[in-house]
Length: 161
Picture 1: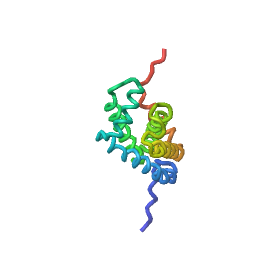
Picture 2: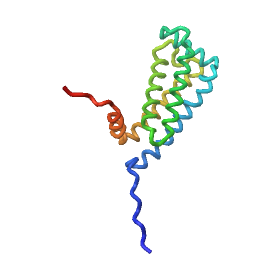
Picture 3: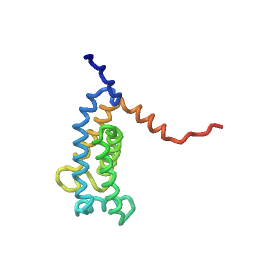
Picture 4: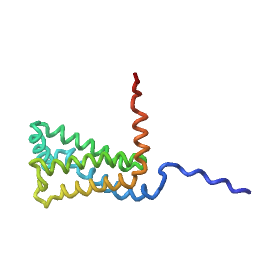
C-alpha cells in the first residue's frame, strides 16, 4: 500500500496565521455593529435623538429615519462580510469607512464626543472598532493585490483611440 501524495494546499490565504488572528477583531467588529442594530432598527429614542441631531446638522431636517436605517443596513452588511473569511478584508475596509464616518461626526458635528453623557462610551467603542478594522487590514494586507485584481477584472474595458 503506497501513501497518496499530499493534497495541494489551498492558495487562499497564502499564510494561514494572519487569517486566524483576524478572527478576534472580526468578532469584535461584528458584535459591536450588530449590538447597536437593536436601537437603530427599532427606533429607540436615544438613536432617534442622535440621528435627528445629525440630520438637522446636515441640512436634511426630517431625514432622521432614512439616515438611521441606511446606517443600520450598511453596518449589517459590514458585519456579515467581516465574519466570512473570504470577504473579511473588504468587510474590514467597509467597517473602517463606517467607523471613520462615525468618528468624524462625533468630532465635528453638534453631536459631540459624549452625546449620552456617559463618558463617551459610544465614541470610544467607535475608536476601538476603527482600530480593529485597521488591524484586520494590516493582518490581511497580503490579500490586497488579489482584491485589486478582482476589482479591475470587473471594470468594463476601455477603448483606446
